[in-house]
Image (cartoon, rainbow, N blue to C red; front, side):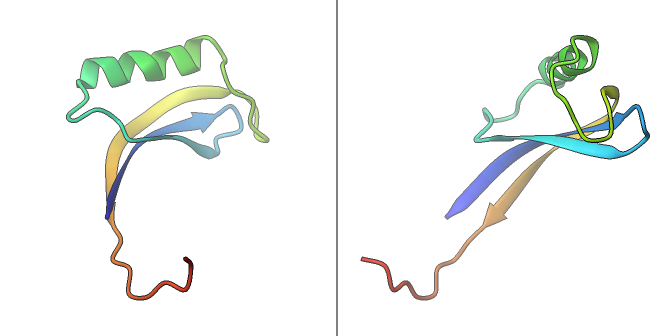
Length: 75
């Protein structure tokens, strides 16, 4: 089984790193669309963090994880 996550990385007003992870992004999301979404996060102060407001975009990546089940005891 494989999972994909769009990980958008930011910095807060205290200079700490914070990321917003979105499960199952579309295939090959356009960079312009991701940039616009990240701009909205910064410009509209959409999320509270323990280290203050999100003030800066750092970057975005797609993380793909492969999981291979070896054994399961659940029915």
